[in-house]
Image 1 (cartoon, rainbow, N blue to C red):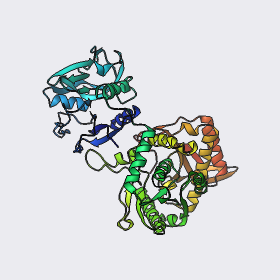
Image 2: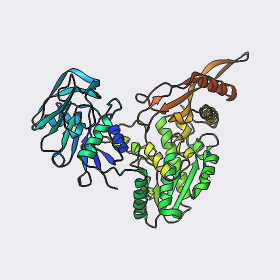
Image 3: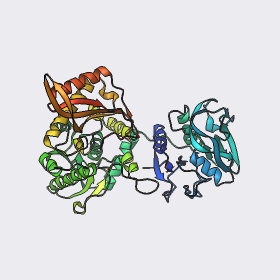
Image 4: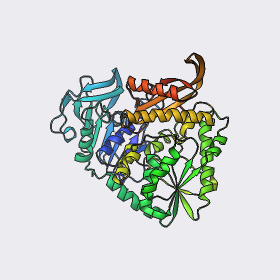
Length: 509
């Protein structure tokens, strides 16, 4: 696969948005930490420098060697990147008199510049910086200003180097996508060949070459990622792909049977393994979220290894790892702070001795769905909400018991079926219920109750990296709450989670 655009990440919260906007232009791009620049830059037709929480004036500011990039390849520097180029190339960056954050308008745009083709004056842009470029770098040419920012955009004479002190990747920048297109397509001449069809063709060919006559075992979850990964592998190696769907006892109500049924007509070689008791035993008296994940991961590996040993000549383990998993496991300063461990990222125990193949590791979630659509996968399956690898274990706060799983499965089924009945399911990116480790006083008939509390969670997102809670209709919440309390023995109170990510995560554990 040809890497068309290189994005160097300086730690900005918006770096992944840059990648998303670039890919929306049907251009392939990759994010690399600023301190891990690929040695071979030949495949890259353009480079983008991201923003950063750092100030270029700070002693610990990121300071990469750009000698093989600046002046050698088309370069777009965003925010910190723009200040970095100015500060270290004869210009100057100073503290701003006022914090330049939020919407601004480009009050001046230099005429005749391809960089600003089809972008009118007074267009909205999004600022997010406390320093400002006081003096342009050597050979710098001012291209745009706002009322408060004189050097909002500039280029360097004699180079295809452009810099902006605003963020074109956020939706608040009205013509941000046009600006990226002007730079990448009209200036850098990057081909717009990144399409689902091209991805399928290239990936299948790569998998054939990578795996050859080898055999792959893949753990299916019933979700979008593992299913699309399975179909890609099936296209490449056919009968040499062995799929295992493990029931860990923590799936949604009736999910084990319904998912196996869905796979019947997809041409996959699938074996279902019911290991519920094994997982529940491994989770007995475990309350810590990370210990739960590890217990589930270890149990899964043991079950998977038992099944894999029944196959002969298997060399590869297929995984549905996607790009956000990869990005969140690497940061510009080394390994990220662990918010939660990713079940798809990390090594295997030595005894498994399998090589890993990850067909989707460079795709965002919505791209996975588009690739699945290209391959003709059932829209209902592609539209399924994401579901965590550890299943309901991380939606049951505290220790896990079979009774708690039963309660949450019933609650979850009422919630999800209600979303479908009210035509809300496809308007929500992910939804689920959480069983809280508290009881509350209630009254049913003339009797006092002291039973469980459940929280409902529904969010809007594109790829799970950020998410907003969904403003579900009160009438819907009223109906669902009533059904849960009346039909699920052991629950007498329902609450709705109105937290966004960040600062909260989508899952509670």
